[in-house]
Length: 193
Image (cartoon, rainbow, N blue to C red; front, side, top):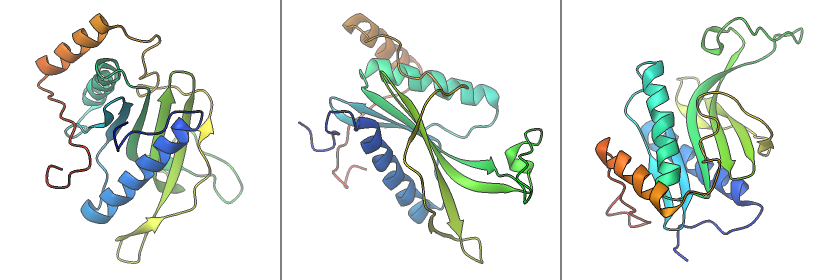
């Protein structure tokens, strides 16, 4: 078993959520933001995939497609998408405005969203970002456990619907190479990361 591999079992997504939260905290403390990131749990350990900037919806769609290829090519047992986002909150009377985009809502909250999947479940976790008076990152607020259930959107259904065979994995790996993505497992060696 490689040192950066999650233990197997029913709490696999909970363990992946903890890893993603640690990664998000590290990025917020060191870089001040979190690039959209996918972490795949594979037999070789965690594989991270970080795209360039999301300049438009097409770039987001491409990243979702790359994440799906990554899951197949590396025979991932689970995936998590990590992204900074805005969440709309209900106003003082409890009304939630669903017509206004969260980024434009006066009742918004800055969060880190985790979208998790394995071959049987999907879950999400919203982590509140706490900032100080000068807008500097202070930490994360309290979070609820992973909420399991259905999900929709471009970043849903990233795990393959069936276990990929060797031919599927080879084809996905070749497509990643064609796209210019070279996956290197660097483990925990800080001189290589």
